[in-house]
Image 1 (cartoon, rainbow, N blue to C red):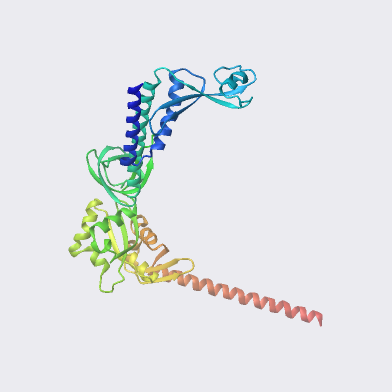
Image 2: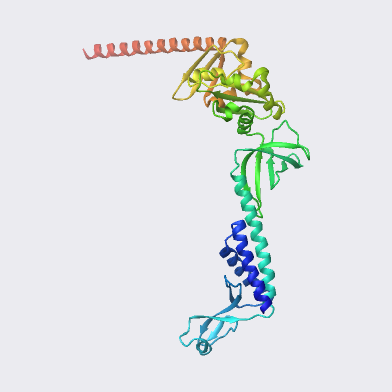
Length: 387
């Protein structure tokens, strides 16, 4: 029993050390051990008793109590005790009360030590997982780098050091192929807890903010806040549009981002395996901003309807296909970038539309005049009849 007391004391000292080093509360661990000991007791002694286990927080001494309901006549010895027997323990007990009787199970000290060890290991793992979860949860919106462990058409699994990164198919760049042991960068989209509680990082290479973060990394003026990225729209693997702005009139935001001979933006393009990036200067005037967003197409005019956030854009005939882009890509990205609905028409189409509108207006005016004449004639005839 003396050796068991020493083990118990060592257990308490170990719990106190864990509280200092890992921040796991001693009371929390003791409670978890007590709960586990109840299960261990019932399993090892094949018991149907209602038991409570208590561990002394100072000495580590373990006490097991059998909880029994006081009955006039006890029918189940495992869970009930007669009033007569109960009053031998406490004369004040009556039918319906509950009494706790301390029991000393044989070899329970060994079982308790093993159970405590298992609980501590489990709680340590949980605590470490929680620390890693918190650490990576704080890194949402950052770029991480890891080695590809597994790659198929549905999912890419990355080794991020302390835990796994998962890149689902929708977060992959469709033009890229990933192979085991490739070093890959990604954007931390989310951190989730898996089925067994292990944290898992959801990584994206297709998210627009991946381009934003890459630009921040490559261009000091963006990182320092001298240049702002107002918005990003993206067709992953093919093209991105980035709207930049600087409140300092002496700074050229587009030139600073592109760099001399395009060297700055080229580093981002290389990371995205050749994805084209259009850097556009943001303007608070929506018509100027929309015209810039449709680059490289030349724009003749932009007519905006502020309430509807709708823009009618007129381009030279030879610029229509360029403004719309392949499969509508340029127009679609410009609309996302500006958050405006954009309708693009060539100069010829616009003139034809104006002519048709004019014809429709003349026809409507003519119909209205005929209607007025008809009503006047009817009114005249009515007056004559009344006379």
